[in-house]
Amino acid sequence: MVNAPLNEMPLMKEDDGIVLFYPHVPESAIEEVAKVLRSRWIGQGPKVEQFEDEFERKFAKGGKAISVGSGTDALHLAYILAGIKEGDEVIAPVFTCTATNIPFLYMGVKVVFADIDAHTLNIDVNHVRRLITPKTKAIVCVHYGGLPCDMDELHEIANSYNIPVIEDAAHALGAKYKGRYIGEISPFTMYSFQAIKSLTTGDGGMLVIQDKNLIEKAKRIRWFGIDRSAKQMGVWENDITEIGYKYQMTDISAAIGLASLKEIDNTLQHRKILLSEYCRGLKGISGIRFIGDGYTDREHAAWLCTVIVERRLDFQRKLRENKIESNQVHYRNDRYTVFGGRSDQFPNMDAIEDKYLVLPLHTKMSIDDVRFICSVAKSGW
Image (cartoon, rainbow, N blue to C red; front, side, top):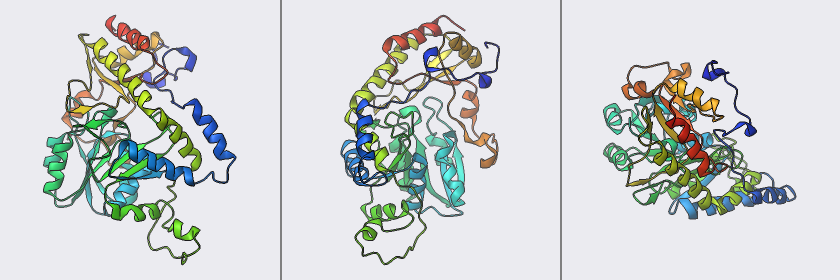
């Protein structure tokens, strides 16, 4: 096992040690879902609207939350609402989940990848400035691991060219930039509620939009282009005037989300305590660097703990020997043929491509678990 390539090693079972991810589903969610299953509404119903309202009050004051079936749905919806069309260019990070950029392929939009910032693994603002052209219609940023990007700088660039910033906040529920929640800053902010996110609905997503004039259009597009409220009131004239999609959330998912919202402060606090312990415990260890510390103007959401490690494969094997799971999780998008193949325009990404690694961080872990992982790292590899 120790000599096997890392990509051939099987995932650890739950009883085998410390796993990389573990879904957080409150016990109360089980009963809430049961109530929905006994009710009239199991598809999109009153729970969906309630979840949107409560999410807005918590994380997106001033914006409107539109719940959907996945984070990818929310991104595609944002790109449509932003007016991005076939032939346009959009600047987006090369290092992210492919879900950030796949919708552009649906739309015939050219993705112009930007390099990463070597200290945060977020989008490199200076590279973004150099990539702007007359065809650029939006800047997409991802708050990698839960650490917010340099939002002031990104907005300064966007405002200079009268284009929107679209935030992929799949990692960043509960993150703050200069005292404001991610979700209160840009015209469009997407959240993911996929299985292993800090708040999960099994799968699901949320788009927060600031322009109230786009709310009804957003609701139509997520439901086949149909004005659903008018149809339910019996006054709909049975016409569809724009392309829509089946992107709505269900009441089953919303019930899980509502239960999770009730304890989200405790969930996020637990994760932040674990991340802080990693930061403290990994300091001073030769050959390893913690990503995301030292910032006073932003608050980390603590979804991922990422480190830069010399001889990464050796370190992973050492962790595996101690029943600790690890992985890279996300990859540079230009490695995929669908995006045109590998480019040599990203020196910062090249420099860490074989060195970054994600360590376990979830609510099934304790501080002692983090201390054990750090002690393994201190023993060398």
